Image (cartoon, rainbow over all chains, first blue to last red; front, side, top):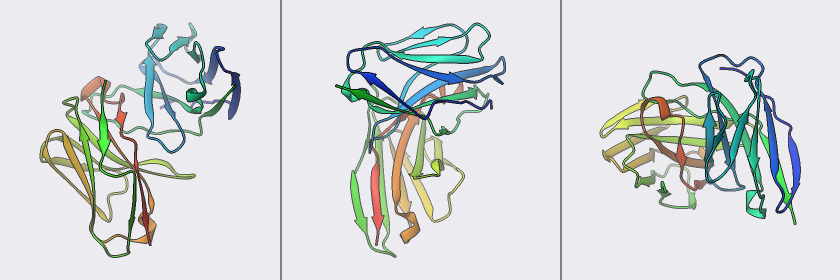
Length: 113
Length: 114
């Protein structure tokens, strides 16, 4: 699976959009980009995933560049509860029945009042 | 909304005790997982189950066993707890196949073995 690079930490003002970047320059055509987050002392939370089109759900938007070498997770109106570590993962959707989640270091997002 | 619940948030056990961690999901997911999470080591898969009574070992199954008698419930058993099993234990569930990486996690059980 392709390696991802994320900034170790970011700050965002409450109410503003949080834009979390992820580089995955070695991504291949059948690899999806997934985002999870983990709030301190809680279980990880799936946020969103995509292949090449931009995706949006009730939590966030995922913008993937045309060459797919990078992506950005956007939290449109960050709240204090969005303070968490955000993980960008690139995975092939395998034909097997399951896959295990593996996290890298991620980006620690601090939303500031 | 998917809901995955775990029986305890915090647990303290003594070395040598048998420990049961329970996980229940309400989304009728076929797949259920047990991970442990330790600082600097990230998430590590202990066991996985893809159906009732079916299980597969993950990366670190030693010292653990699992039970899945009902689709919604997946139990992790520490046969004889040891101090190196002090950790955060996370249960997750998912549908099989292409969306199996979209996993829904419980709140975690922080187990301390003294």
